[in-house]
Image 1 (tube, rainbow, N blue to C red):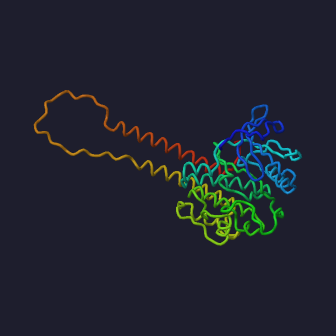
Image 2: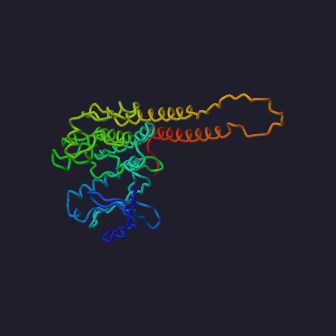
Length: 347
């Protein structure tokens, strides 16, 4: 996550926290890196001054805090403190070190099938906890997923809403990010946990492709494609494409549940990780055979000189390859198993 220096207009202290850097800014406010007296680092969000008097935005901000309080498990950032009655309402969550999924793909390119499935399994398990708390995220996308050393974390519940509750926005108004919104959100219809499944499918397609499955364009074009066109999954690994296509079904009833999705992605993560490891292990460097030469006359007999075996360098390279593959496969398998067992523990 990119950090920026504090600006002249930024506060230096909020509540019991001293602010050090800007982490980002959005439509609702600014997020800062802060710390308390014990040195615990937090991500502290402060509502924008021009929105502080807007009761709808205050309600939206309070809803984000309420959602953070209700969700249990390690796949979200834990709420540390909040003050909704302040002149500029704020709340602080545990700081999550690591880049967003968006930034990771932008810098390193698309992820492998094993990596995409492992991250997806953990996120699906995280959504199980979110939905069990009666919350629908409604804005799941690559920039709202942070890749911490202990697994992915879902952040930014700014437009989350309780299951079954009426929306704060007018009917027919889409709230969220084009290209990752579910069709029912675009139409302004009621959302459900299946809406988050659609967004997760689009997010994982982005991880595997490096682009939205609905391409690029204006907001209007993107929203039209989400409702009326099929996702473009050419380039998505074959192991993932059918599952992601089912997540991106236009009808909520045709999408898998988060539990089904988590288990299926865990299976794919383990299988693909083992397959990638096996492919590397069987790809040993080929030695070129030297052309056979016959001596013109017998060479004089000399005591044989001791030389290192010709294959020692090759063996060492192969050993290093196997070690790297072993570690990679172990980490991916462990992540898949952890996702199946639940997102627990601190960041």
